Length: 255
Ligand code: PGA
Image 1 (tube, rainbow, N blue to C red):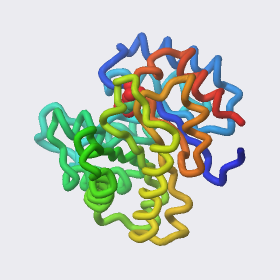
Image 2: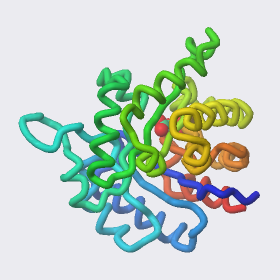
Image 3: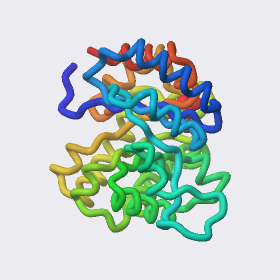
Image 4: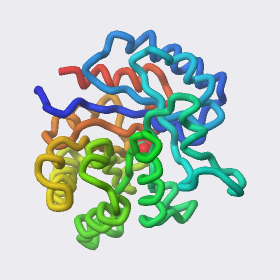
């Protein structure tokens, strides 16, 4: 299957891996995936591992992402990290609006949209996470939730910035549960997201934006999910912590 949009598969390490463990993981990934050109490969370590990991993957086919950043340039924001600080380690991507941050840090769409705009102003590509909870799905509100999150978290973006934005559709009920969305469920949501993007930014832009699926992606289901016409990659949590399973996911998607 040939797609116009290049697949982008990112590993979200969450609050796992010391710098030394991160170095060991990317060293192994470089060995297993050094030949892969067909997929954009991204690792998103915790802040404390960015510096050491960036040195290992310098000039390789593995790009660096962060898991969050602050919406301000600098100043009195204890415990926060700015875009400028991330740039020091050649961070190219930043995950914004992950459901864990929406839940535990109470991040809302308005805050997320400020972070997204700051990422663009700093030439970092945001990976913007959206997705419904199980209760919302059961109540038949999935599309409504997705539409609200798209308009809210992408507020104020130009069409050009949208092209440099990645959307991650992550149904909350599939994250860390072992229960992935079926390929059909993922495709249905992705097609809807593209439709909303078409209305907001125009059809041409919507056709070029990459939409990742996230939620219990593993070597055994990655290929079926990625085969769907509107699924352009994956945001992988648990299975990205192990070099072999993360590389198997990527290698299984080289059609
Ligand atoms: P999971 O996490 O792959 O462990 O379900 C995905 C994510 O939260 O991005």
